[in-house]
Image: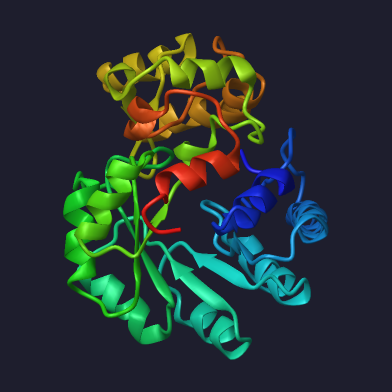
Amino acid sequence: MTDARLVAEVSEAGGLGILGPHAGQTTNPKSNEEVIGRMRTEIRKVQSLTDKPFGIPVMIAGNPDVYPLMVDLILEENVPVVLINGIDAAFFKIFKEAGRKILCRPLDVTPENAREAERLGADIIIATGFDEGGTLPSKTIGTFSVTSQIAHAVTIPVMSAGGITDVHGVRSVFALGAEGVYAGTLFLATLESRMADSVKKMVVNSSADDLLMFRSALSFYRSLPTPFAYKLVEMDKAGKSTEEITNVLVSNQGMRVGMVEGNLEEGYISVGNGITYIKEIRSVKAVINDVMQDFI
């Protein structure tokens, strides 16, 4: 759901753009080498569009064989920030020695693993609550609760993630001890987003009350109501295994089909609870200026 244009716009507007592991792509790569080649191309596009910092993840869910290649890519292309989705001491050591900034985002953040990340050299810990979109944490702890919990556990800055899409949410998590917000859904309904225009309008016209939820291999997923999402919900209600549900979830690249192509019959729309407060399609700069108006 990301590409060089969106990431560069976020960084230019004062945020930190994060380039997803399949940024700008419309087909699945056939090899790990192809993953790296595509990412290298997209990284260089970002670098041609902005001189501001940006980051990429090193750990891609379900594909550990690509991790060493991502490490080399980050170092070779001088990407200044790395996102580590978990606790891996070897990765921390490599990137600290290379002078990179490290964002650490465990799927299920706890005071214990947050302190471990700080000990290993994380510069920022991301506290993700159950309000987020994408793959949800397995613990159903809300964003406000987990933000306060982690802010009290570490001395490094905490970014709060999950359902934050307006200035009121930003003010709230800052009051709880966060020093930044990590947002995904917030940027989907922007002019620079590669999401289908029809889906952007769907997000603007929907709220958290409309969202469906179903199990997946890692935890849970949310989707706006589409025929495909209803199928996954029915599989869940029928007691199908998480493996069976996940196989259907990924069988036809449902996220790309639904969100990039706007095909609601065969795809799903993964967003967080914060869609309630997304009321119009705006530029990335306008969004950041609005949600960060107290702090610019």
